[in-house]
Every structure is written in C-alpha cells, then in structure tokens.
Amino acid sequence: MATQKLSSLLSVSTTSASLRSLGRHFSWGRGINRFSTSVAIEEPITPPVQIDHTQLLIDGKFVDAASGKTFPTLDPRTGEVIAHVSEGDSEDVNRAVSAARKAFDEGPWPKMTPYERSRILFRFADLLEKHNDEVAALETWDNGKPYEQAANVEIPMVIRLFRYYAGWADKIHGLTVPADGPYHVQTLHEPIGVAGQIVPWNFPLLMYAWKVGPALACGNTIVLKTAEQTPLSAIYVSKLFLEAGLPPGVLNLISGFGPTAGAAICSHMDVDKLAFTGSTNTGKIVLELASKSNLKPVTLELGGKSPIIVCEDADIDLAVEHAHSALFFNQGQCCCAGSRTFVHERVYDEFVEKAKARALKRVVGDPFKKGVEQGPQIDAVQFKKILNYIKSGIESGATLESGGDSVGSKGYYIQPTVFSNVQDDMLIAKDEIFGPVQSILKFQTLDEVIRRANASRYGLAAGVFTKNINTANTLTRALKAGTIWINCYIVFDAAIPFGGYKMSGHGREKGIYSLSNYLQVKAVVTPLENPAWL
Picture 1: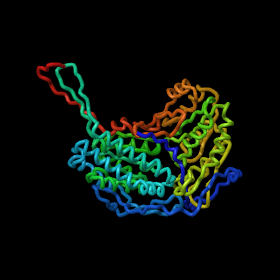
Picture 2: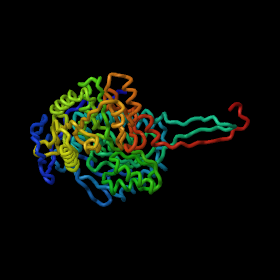
Picture 3: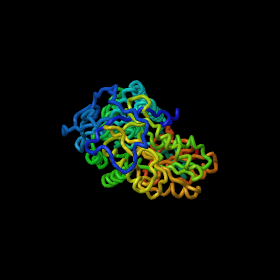
Picture 4: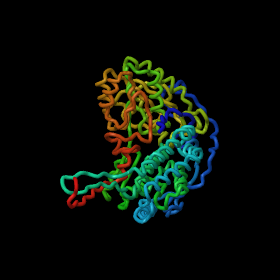
C-alpha cells in the first residue's frame, strides 16, 4: 500500500470570509507589514461542483429533519452561505438509531457473508474514485483546505482506507483455544451492534473513513453525526454508498449540533458503541454521557500539543521543512500538528532564520487556485481564537519573527506566524491553538527536552530529527505519545494505527487495531466426550 505523506502535495488554500462582527485588525503596536507573507487573494473562484443533497440520511432515504429546521453551512472564503442543511435533533437521532437497530437485528448486513460485505465496500471505493474531483471540491468549498490537497492527497487516502477495510472484511475470525480439560473452546469475534460516530470539521472525510470503514467491515450499523461546519462532503459520499448497494439503515447520517444531535447519540440507550474525534473538553462530555446511559464503550481521538525535537546533529534544512509542514498543514487545524518545536541551542539561530524565511514564502489565497498552500481558517470563531493567541504570544514576551495578523479585507485568512524565544509557561506553548502559529523553543540536553516535551496533558504525536540512531531510540522510547515520526512528519497509512496517550484519547484508529473497537469477543465452551487428543 502506498504510504501517503500529507504534506507532500500541499498547494491551494484559502479565500475569504466576512469579519464584520469581529472588526478587521488588531493593533498590537508592531509593524505587522514587516512580517508579510506571499498572498494570492482575489475574487473567489466558483467551485466546480453543485450541491444536490442537503438532507439527513435515515433508513436509506434522504429526508428532512422532523422539526423542519435547517442551518446554513458557510464558505470560509467569504462567510457567505453555501447551502442550508437539515438540522437533526434528538427525534431524528431516535429515527436513525431505530433504523440502524432494525438493520442490525433483522436486515441483511450482519448476515451477509464477509465477502459480500467486502464487495460493497470495494464498489463504494470505486465510485468515490470516479467522483474524486467533485468530492474534493465540496471538501474545499465547505472547509477552506487547498483543493490540490483534497484532490491529490486526502480523497485518494479515503479511497485507500475503504479498500483497506474491504480487504479486512473476510479476514476477521476468532481462535481455537486449548483448555485444561476435555473441552473444545473457541472465541467468536462478533459485531458490536449500532455504532454512534461523531466526526470533526478539520478532516471531514478522512475521519469519516477512519470510523465508517472498520465499523462496516466488522458488520455493524452506524449513526454518524457530521460537524455542523462541514456537512456537505459526507452527505455526498453517503449517497455513493447507497449506489454501491449498502442496504437501508446500515449507514445513517445526521447533520446537526453537538448539544442536540451529538448529545442524543451519546446518551442513547440503543447505541452500543461510540467513536468521537474532536476537542478534549468535548471528549470528556462524550465519555460522561456514555457512562450515564448504558456504559457503551468509547473510542476518543482528541487534542494535542505535539513536540518536534531538532537535535544538534539534525539536517537543518530537512528539519525546517518538515517542522513547517507539521505546523502549517491544513491551516494549522490538525490534531497532531507539531506545535512545540524544540531546537538544540547550538543550531537554534540557524533554524529560526530558516523557519522564518520558509513561513514568509508560504502562499495564502483562494484554496481553489493552483499553487496556494494555505486557505482560510474554518470560521469566525476559530479565526478570532487564533488571533487572540498571537496577541498573547506577543504580550508574554515571545519574539514575533513573521506573520502575526490577518490577511486581506475579507475571509478568515491568517498570516503564517512564527514565534521564537518561546517559554514553556506561555499559553502559545501550552494550549492547542489549532491555527498557523509556530512556537520555537530552545533546549540544551536530551534529559531536559524529554522532561519538557512530556510536560503536557496531551500525548498524541511527536517528531524527532537526528542522524544518531541511539538518540532516536532514546527519544522514541521516552516520549509519551501515540505516534513518533523520525526525520519525517505527518506520514499516514491505512495500516498505521493512530491515537493518543494521556488526554489525547482512548484507543487506536486505522490498521488492524481499529477493528477491535467494533468487535466483541465471545468465548464458547463445549464438552468433549472421549476426545482422541486435547
């Protein structure tokens, strides 16, 4: 399987979004224009796709919300409405769960041979490949990520993930277990039932694939809630699932808000399993609602403040480029973003100068325009949050090397921002900013940087840059994180598990480890009468 490096095809991104309610500029007493970046912002390009479906998917049909309510999904390039989408709430969740329960208990999906299930997943992947460009355009339009990133990297990865799980569908089986006595013992790996899934807005379809793929391969049925900011691409591809032959009720899609639709899924007594990707604070709520209802098991992929460690013997040019993409990829809206860059004191000044130069070359603009690397942030809330963190960094004494302001007269654009002389107790070094803000810290010894890197409530990922295998081995075993990249970053593959330590979550997604999230193990014991052997 082709391992994908997400940062390898970064181009196109950003446009415009109205900031009327926020005001246009923050005045912090710095000559922000001295820290300008490459800009390619013009009138927004018309997306090459039309919106055909905006309803909920329940029991194999696209339907309006029971309340009749809709909500707007916005173009982050302009803040203008793309479409009005049906707003699901608890009543719609009840309908969706009932359909999923019936499909699991009475429908053909769990009773199909695993091979037949795999054929449907393969057909879906083929349809998705056929519609790659339309799906990518929806993802860019609704999210603001570069079209070239969506079309050339992310959607092909989604296709690869579904083919990977299609391949697993007929290879899931239990074991025969020897026992101390005349018994035949076997284990059955059974589908868990109705899976409730909640996906985030930063990678709408990748997270859809991470959750839907293993759940369906294992024979479960699903009720999935999209992020209210980015519902469109999931609706589109779920239509393709129906075309591929997925039976009614197996996959149900609810667009709506966390406190209503999301809470209803988490609290539902007939949902057997939850999987959530999002913030740590919301993850705590998901876990609490699951425990207060039917103690359903929960998989959580949450926040991060991932360290990158650049040792004194590192290839500095390589480290600068990877650290740049580790932070600025997807507008910095990435849970495993390398948002704490620790650089050895002997190479610190060189690294900072090169990191600054790279940030100043980063092209910000309409994500549909070829060559653009960075698009708008997702919405006004995130835009304002990021600018407040930049203000905090300046006020706390970090050195602003580049960026530090918004870009253009409309749209949620922010300049690629680099801070040096960052200290561990600054908010920009502790909090998950989820934006294009790189913090560069200085260290002296390995023991010191291990202690500082681990001094975080998060533990999602880390990067290490060194030419010394012993240094690499020391750091990979000492760092408390679910993924460690050595002399690379943001390398993803369908078979590589992903998940966090500490408050970055529970469980693993992708790879063989993700299957256990959607299976139950049953032991079956049968007496043997006069067995020839044991």
